[in-house]
Each structure stands twice: as C-alpha cells, then as structure tokens.
Image 1 (cartoon, helix red, strand yellow):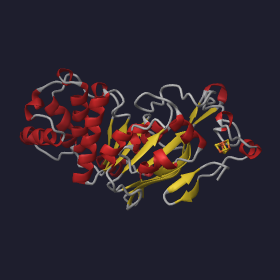
Image 2 (tube, rainbow, N blue to C red):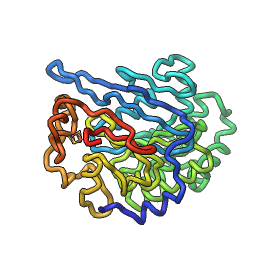
Image 3 (tube, rainbow, N blue to C red):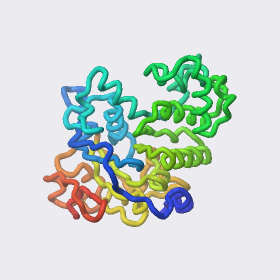
Image 4 (cartoon, helix red, strand yellow):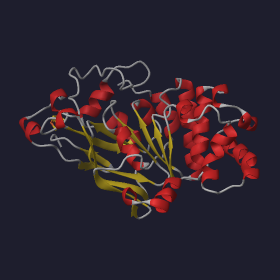
Amino acid sequence: MSLDKKKAGEKSGSNRPATGEAIMEAKHVTKQFPASGGRTLKACNDVNLTVYRGQTLGIVGESGCGKSTFVKMIVQMFQPTEGEIIYDGKDITKLKGEELRQSRRKIQMVFQDPAAAFSPKMKIIDIVTEPLMNFGLIRRSEREAKAKELLAMVELPEDFIYRYPHNMSGGQRQRIGIARALALEPEIIVCDEATSALDVSVQDRIIELLVKLQKEKGISFVFICHDMALVQSFAHRVAVMYLGNIVEVLPGIEVGTNAQHPYTQAMLGAIFSTHMDFTKKIESIESEAPSPVDVPTGCPFQNRCDCCMDICKREKPALKQIGKDHQVACHLF
Ligand code: SF4
C-alpha cells in the first residue's frame, strides 16, 4: 500500500472520533443536469451524508464523480433536483430572501484557485473585510483592525493588509481565502480542492492551519479532494464517491487498513509516488469509468470491478452499515 503513513501520523492524532453532534444532514440529495440528445446527467444520485460539529468530512473520488456538485448544493450555489439539506433545523434548499442570506453567513467556501476568487484590484484589507461590510457587521473605521485580526488567525503578517493578491504566493493567497471565509464566523467551511493547486509542502502547512482553526473554533469542514493520502491524514470521516454515488463511508483513520469497497481498494492499491492522486490513471483499474450520462443498470462500478457478479448487473447495491461508522454499497456485503 502506498499510503503516506508519515503524513497520516503527523496530522491525525490518536483520537479522531467519526461521529458526534450532527450539524448538517444531506438526505436523498440528487442533482440532474440536462445533457445532449435529451439525455440526463445525474451528477449526484441519492446522496445521504452527515457533517458533524467540529469535525472534517472528506469527500474523495475521481474528477467528474459529483463531489464538487454536491458541495455546491451545500453552499447553495446549486439547487438539488430532489432531496433536502438540513442545517439548523431547516431545509436550506427551500430558504429564500433574508433567511437564505443569513444561512449563507454560517456556511462559507474556500475555492481551489484563490487568485481567480479575488478581484485583482482589491487590496487584502478589502477582500477579507468585504463580507463583514456586506452584512453591516463593522464600520469602515473598524476595517483595518479587523483585517489584521483575520490575518493573524491565518498566520500572516498584519502589514499584508495593504498588499494586492498578485504580490503574494499561492499559499499566502489561500490563507487569505481562509481568512475571508473566517470573517463571518461560520460553523461550516467547505473546501473545494482548496489545496490542489499548491506545492506539497505548502499544502501540508495549509492543512495544519485548518486543523488548528478547527480545534480553536470548533468549525466543521467539508473537504473535497482527489488526494486520498492527504484527506485520510486529517479527516474524521471519508466518503468515497463514484459516478454520483456514495460507495463507502468510513473513519479517516481506517482508510488505509479497513476500506472494503472494490473501488476504494482499487484506489488504495494504485501505485503513486508520494500521494494517491486520482487525476492520474488508477493503474489497478484498467477500464475507463462509463460516461455519467450513460451509467449502467445495477452497480455503477460493474465494468471495472474484478468481483462483478450477475446481481451486480441487475440491482444497484444500497449503502449498508457493515461496522461501527462504516457503510459500503456493494453486493459483496
Ligand atoms: Fe463490484 Fe458488484 Fe460490489 Fe459493484 S456491487 S463493487 S460490481 S462486487
């Protein structure tokens, strides 16, 4: 197995509970998009996931598996076709007007490319305090002190507040993205491939910052990533997605030793140098994933699975509990 054990050990700590107090629940969430020829692309298919308070839910899978679509529904950039997302006792997919605006305060997002997320004409002081100004939470005269406070949280020097994003490194810009997300004191931060564009050493320091902020502020993270070694090193739970379906959910600390689904095992068995990077070819799976507009009846993984049985071609396996905090969607279980 090519797991980066050193990395895993550094961040995981000995006690990483996989459950706790639920802060958000996605129930039967499906998202469809119209595709060419009158067909339908099912980007997310009956997704059920829980985010626990003060914990990290990692979502991994190859590109196109639906993980980005799912988190865009959490931050209400997309509306689900079916299903509900319960936060603070309400289905946030139904919120409108001021209620929607207030719920957005509590669920923030950090994007993959911080450079694209900021206006190059804005100084850092404007970027990190803009959400507070928009919500009328601070006066103009308070901006400088607040911006310095936010930069201190992400371990950047306070004199950076008068810089522009293009005068900073990729890692520093991602820290600014995190500072901006922290400004409204959110309960949940969604990180969409937030470290993927960074060098490995910078990536490690950003993860260490997120872990520290989580301990200090009790923030829940939903961290989507294609790097299994990275995500299992700090996530409390890891959900594996394949063609819009959740195929396995298990504690992060068990990924390297107890993953059961043939797809998760194939990903773990892939030989990569330092990280399991799913943007590269998974060498242990020879065939390509089917097109998301042409998913076969039965198990979506059937054409790539060495264990495929007759039933797998007829019936789609449901996600079943196979152990404490461990669910798998496979007819082998
Ligand atoms: Fe393989 Fe069948 Fe399990 Fe799908 S349900 S992963 S085809 S064994």
